[in-house]
Image (cartoon, rainbow, N blue to C red; front, side, top):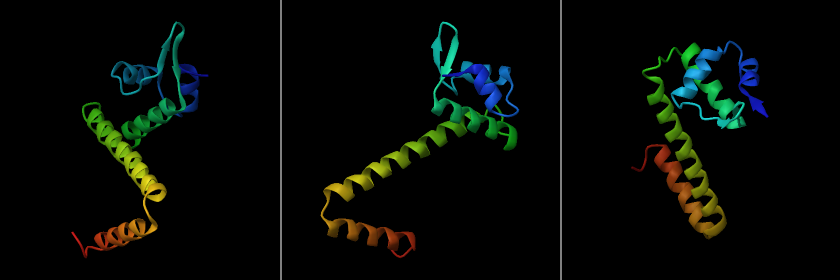
Length: 113
């Protein structure tokens, strides 16, 4: 069980008031309990990401929601691409997969658009 105290001890340099602000802003969404919050592994990774963006990359609180939204979109697209690739691998005849790979290789090289 990952509590707020565990998160603060785990993420070096993280301040409680910053984490509480991120929760208030709904940038991190741990599960509320009668004793506080319970964080899942994905919540902990989100905290690490926000901490890195704000401390190391100096993304301010005004820009942070935009950056997080864009990153969420990128991650969602990656999941969708993985699902499409998996469907092609498992459901399409081998020649369809080969044709698609050939097309993507050419498109990546700038020969087809």
